[in-house]
Picture 1 (cartoon, helix red, strand yellow):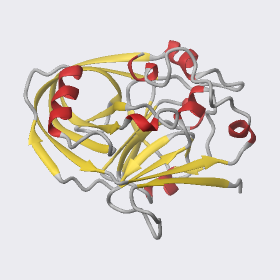
Picture 2: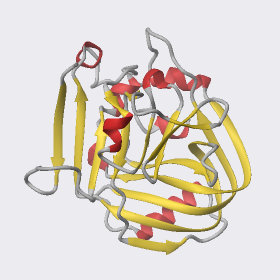
Picture 3: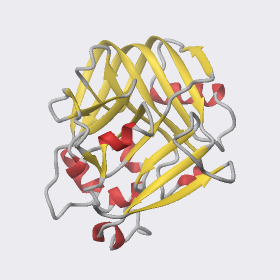
Length: 254
């Protein structure tokens, strides 16, 4: 089995034992994914031991990953959500054992920037990561997924040129994601990142646009970030200091 390296960033000074309720567990770095490091070693079975809610992708950049209530799904370019087997692996993912401490009704009629602004007002100051879950209805949603890539893997921004988008009207489901502070740049993308899965857990994707209907948001403030780094040659040789044109945040809205 290949070796893993672990880097731990924490508000508390030590890390012992299993994942805490306030921990963000991340597989690899977003900059590695941006450079085409698309095969990982962490399985879905291992990932599920670190959290019940989260997002990411699977090996080969084969679609979007959505984790909700401890169930892990892959959304392919047909927009369908399919349960992932424990043996599948991920090159990049973020999960947390979701235990919300803040809850609020979401105003109707907010677009994505409006929802993010509303969340910014609701959330504590920006220096802690926040995990977010919104269950409700959406009058409009634009989602995306990415087709599976083949080696030699292209940079992520190149792969995203082949993305497929899906437009939904009047859909119920779960929006989930994270707001990350500015100091994670390079390790991840500061700001908001959302995925969606419908109420039947049959459709989903990465969120590009939305308009809220009715719903309720739940938020968990996180005080520990654990990052597991791959130990393979692809990661070791990747030019991780070079984000590429537009930087990591360009990935979110493309």
